Length: 397
Ligand SMILES: [Zn+2]
Image (cartoon, rainbow, N blue to C red):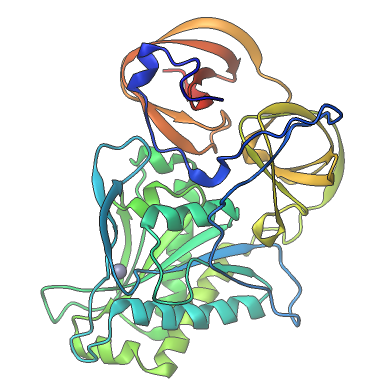
């Protein structure tokens, strides 16, 4: 849709930071029942490590984000969808008081050990970076985790303090009062607890507990469960030196891997596939995968918002027929059935977040100031509002 079309004055109050992932031009093929669009310039994760050939793929995708990079980028970005608060895109992190090692180096050292441990256990591992000379903002790192449909987005950092005495491990997670992360909050908190206890058991380091945060861009933009590990304090000479010892780094990685295992312990590794015969409605640009579960199985193709027929489902994934063959879509962006068309005025009395889909797991894409709007469809207490960004969903007050 052309951005100048269908834009009413009230819609100009929408503030938008739409992800670039699906800025694609529609390809019209008369013979095709489905309008396929190629995804242009998808910010693909920089590095992917396949699961080890010795370990069967367990169907779980982990996105590892070694915090920071060689040079920080002080350009500003909103700290969440629709937020007026702007923070630097990415900083260069702290430095070891004893080792003089920059944090971004330590973070990557341990992340690479963890990548190999996870791959050996059958996880698919996606890395946001595997070198220091990158320029990836915290929002973009969160986007990468979301685009690969990672089951967990693990951010790896080390701490710094004014006090040289401060030491120990903490694991951060999105707070329960954070509106941006409502859909991933409970899972993130559960993962934080498991990762922390795995690390404490493996390292004997002091535990500083799990810590709820609502001010981190990398959390607020996340659409998949996420935690941030602070492995120890580089401002503490002993802990700084220890975190650079190869044997201790292995313990840190082992502890994180054990925590990840514990978090996913009750998940059925491979969801059974069952026949399904019904319509599903794609609520926006929807990526196509050649297997259920996400990760490396993402194709370069996407479907626009439309209702399609599914013939199989696997967990929350639907198998649909396209002229490229049979492909999978994530049910997070799809509804079983069709929304009810309505023409209904809505009075927004406070700033209201707009989501890509009305099922509670959609991506928050924009915010509307208090105003009168008109709903064009209804779905389980959610309403669709047509904006110049396309159709987005808000929850009735
Ligand atoms: Zn850091």
